[in-house]
Length: 279
Image (tube, rainbow, N blue to C red; front, side, top):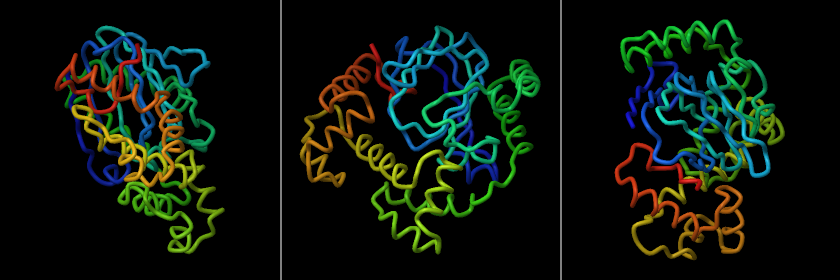
C-alpha cells in the first residue's frame, strides 16, 4: 500500500497530526483498530468500505467517507481491494472546529461526511480530489478546505491546553489537578471535553495510557504481562486484563498473537503499527 503524509501549516498543525493519502490492497479484508487518542475524517475515492463500531452492532457501508470521534472501543474496518482515500488524523480536540455539532453526539457512532458537511460541498470536494494530479495535490486541496472551514469553538483553548498535558504525560496525570491548574471546575472541564472531544478528560487519559502501554510492547519477544501492567499503573493484573479486553476486544495473549501474525505475514507494512487482522 502507498501512504503519503503531510503535516499541515498553522493553525491546522495544532489540531491535526497529519493529512494522508492511502491507496492499494489492504493486508487483510478486515482490520481491527483498537481505540487511539485520535479523531478521523476519511474521504473515500474508491469502492465503499465498511465499519462495525462494536460487537453486536450491524456493519455499515461508507461510499463517500466518514467521520469518527475518539473511539472508546475497537472498530472493525472492512477494506475493499484497491482501496483509495485521503483523510485526516486529528488530535483529540482537533475535529471540533470542523464538526458543527457536539462531539459527544457521535461517540462510537461513525457518520458519513455528507451528514457533517452536506452533500453539495462533499460532492464538489470529492470531484476536485479525484481530478488532482497526485497525492500531494490532493492533500493540499484538503488542507485548503480545512483552512476555509476552520472556526474557533468555545473552550477550545482550554481543552487544547489540558489535552496537551494529558498527551505529554501519556495519560499519567491527575485530572483534578488539571482543572485546578486551569482555574475551572472539574464539571466544566468535563463538559467542554464532551462537547469538543466527545469524551471526558479522564477517559482521554485512559486512552492515552492504554495506547502508550500497548505501543511499548515488543511483540517479537517474550512479554512479561505483570511488568507491563505495573508500568502502566495497574497494580491489579485482573483490572489490566479487563481494560485490555474492553479496548481491543482481545485478551492480552490473543492481542500478541494477532500482532505477531501481522508482523510475520506483512513485515514492514505501512499499516503495521496499530491495526490488527480481524479474521
